[in-house]
Image (cartoon, rainbow, N blue to C red; front, side):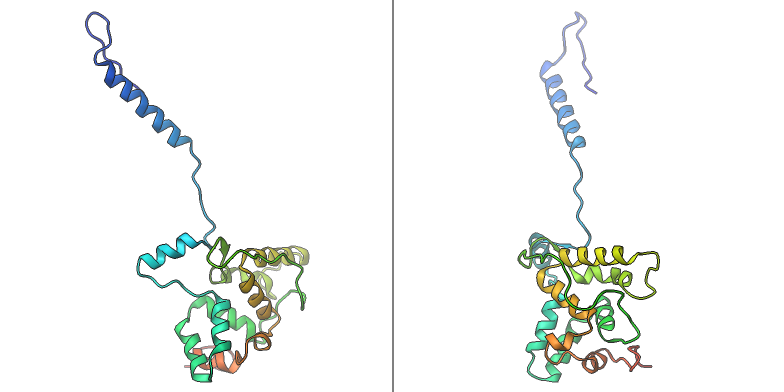
Length: 204
């Protein structure tokens, strides 16, 4: 609302101030009409990663990058160190799904018909460290309300949101064939790295 003050003779008092108030009111209205932009909580962007780096925080590796480091490590101690240096709840969850025989994936084995997200790493895509909390949807007993088609559709959507390398890694997890793709990435290595017993639970 613009308040206009008048002189006793009816003329506008201080017209320049009235003009400024009108312009300010217009700017406020325009800002209120602009839509608020929100991002997917699992969305990684080059700008966001740079902001983390500028703030002095290390940018976490993609799970596919961790797997590649394990593959490239020359010996077991180095492979263990890669896993321990990058330990997180999400990584443990994913690797348990890859190796624990009690976890059964309710998805077809083999190749998945999806479109690879070929956007460069560091640009807009989802990350498995955030999407890990949704993986229960694809396991036996996870969500029995989902139909087979719906479950498979959700999985394809997840793969297409991830970077090409992380989607490839996730498929090896679901097929329980990580060691086929990443040398030395075995169940025994994971159990030793995280101090798990043969039931993939933390030792007492």
